[in-house]
Length: 253
Image (cartoon, rainbow, N blue to C red; front, side, top):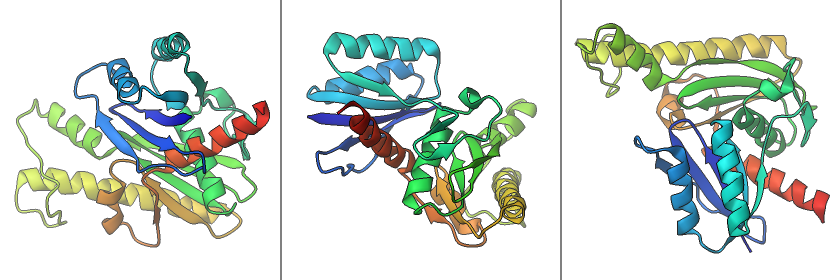
């Protein structure tokens, strides 16, 4: 039996293989590069013709989900789509409308809660957008914030200048000596300052010391500039999907 854990994000597809012992393979990723996300998903199925089950989280359209369900049914592949819930897998949602919390954020909270042995934590997902969510040690999600990611911030600034400007994230410094480095450094340090400020305010409002967890495509790039301790877990969502797969197997066994 081959189980795939799949995260279909805004800009790329990420996946791992879950083996019978409950171990996940190294996370792999493929950028859509202008192609439809569905095409990337179908390519993934062709790469793993022996797959028998998929646990999927996505931030895409209902049409994407419906087509994936139809395709998996046609191929005889079991499918579980992870969705946000008011209370599930040890997490109690802090949203007034729990179903509106991004499913990827919910899966990340599930993973973080169990990986840090139910300590209070803040999960910072540094992707196309940056999400910052707080969870108490009992699994209560206190809510969170969403802000533009590194490249998105830079793209917005350049677009405002009608593409007359360029940028560089190389060797950032607060004393930039050129416009491209000033834009890149400004976006980088602006995002770092925002993350640090939000985490500090969350910590002040929470009842116990917490663990900061970084994940997402820009986590490694941002970590050197963030003050304080951070735990980087690049495959956080894969770990969440693994846990959900195991729990769903117990429910249906």
